[in-house]
Structures are given as structure tokens and as C-alpha cells.
Image (cartoon, rainbow, N blue to C red; front, side):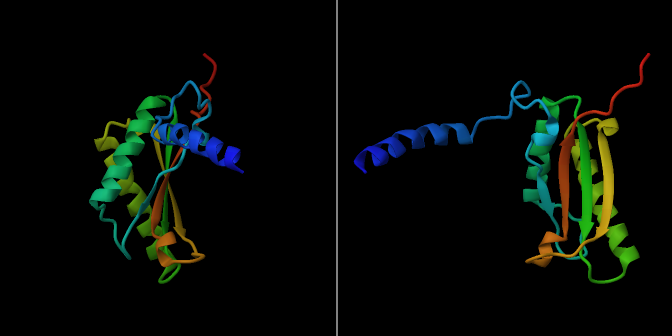
Amino acid sequence: MHRRLLLSAAVLPLLAACSGAELDPIFVRDPANLPHPVIFFSEDSTVLDDAAKGTIREAAETAGRFGDARVNVFGYAGPIGGAAFNRQLSDARAQVVAAELRRNGVASERIFVVPRGPVPFDMAPIESRRVEIRFAAPAPRPPQ
């Protein structure tokens, strides 16, 4: 019992040191395996708060480390209200995030906006009021 406790105590500092480690392109071969940042919005809003801008800035830094990765921006809206309005809202949210990514140095040709429209939520309405940034391997180039 004491041996397990001692071993656990010895491992904790190592885990803590790893928690702040940066993602390295040498070790993450497929950008799709990267964590995908999520930005949440208020109801019927496209306004980015300071926390959202910070999340997007971090995503732009990650995109910079994976210079050829596609940056897919998926916009969502809640299921309440008209489908057309919510589709437009999901697109507007994704466009706002894409613009902020560009302001933070991500090239436009790497950013792909995908409005998903209204989606149901499982636990809380804020789940539907989001934009996800997902990294992907670049599209294959045609032979020259």
C-alpha cells in the first residue's frame, strides 16, 4: 500500500510538468488528432468576448505550428426558432471566428467555414451556441 502511494507521489510532478507541454508537429503527425477549440456564444449573438478571442488566438498559434493544416471552422446554432435564421446565425458565428483567425495570422486559404445550422443539445442550450475549430491534414495537391 505504501509502495503504491509513494509511486503515485513520484509520478505526479512528472504529469504536472507534461500538462503545459506544447504540441509538437514532430510528435503529432495528423493535425486531426489535435484538440479542437470550442468558442461559445450568447443566445442569438455573434459577439466574441475576451475569453473567446483568447481561445481563437491559441488556435491561431497552433495553426502556425502546423503550417499546412486545414483549419475547419464549424458553426452551430440552437434548435429553437426558424431553421433559416439559425442556419444564418451558425454561418455568421463561424465567419466571425474565421475573421479573428485571419487577424491572428492564419492565411485565408487555409480556413474553411462550415455552417451546420441548428442542432439539438443534450444537457444545456449553450452546447448548440458554439463554433468548433478543427484541424485537418491538407487536401492532396494535384500532380504537376
